[in-house]
Image (cartoon, rainbow, N blue to C red; front, side, top):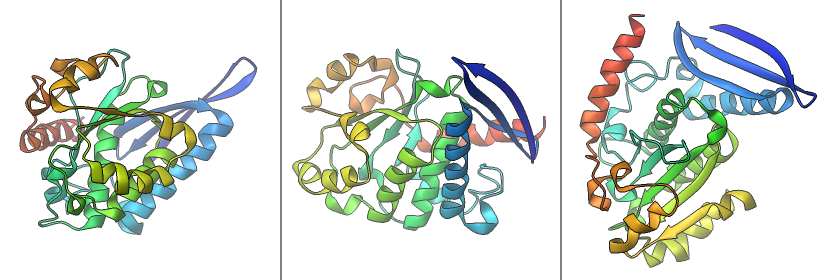
Length: 250
């Protein structure tokens, strides 16, 4: 592992710019004030070790390394990055609980799939301060789709461990049971600021227009939500393999 550090100041406060290189693979770029960076950097690696274990957490976050045993969870397509950014320049993540069948993967594997999706999203984010936008498609969801371990870990690490802060969570076509049961559980693991960023959209026919009020247009969301994007987890994985192979050859 190689580390590169550059010091500077903004409004009199020390600024830390830190790049991480793991096996010559550029993972991401962190730009934070020094104290904030140190604290969040430690939480990131603590969270990564908690999710991946002592042996895997130091491996490259690739399908052939740290995620080689979690392909079934990733292929389920429960949580993946969307290819476009919203009009504010934020990366967008797509979450569809109904896709969580639990077939061929464990709760721990699903949480690692969540982490990997965030890793991929962070690599393409040129402005870490822009944050990340979460889009949740709840149509057809049932209480059995919500893996308590994975969902609690997802909210906890997204809120406390990740360099990219969630700037908005758009929940679309949310069933009544989610409002009554799941929402209080998730909100328990979120701070007041995080809870204020959760926005509910519905009914289904109004979702595209409602999202457009927040800079999320039809060409940015999957077709089954009323958008124009093709959402194919298998194709996404194939593309990721090609990207990671190319990066390994650099």
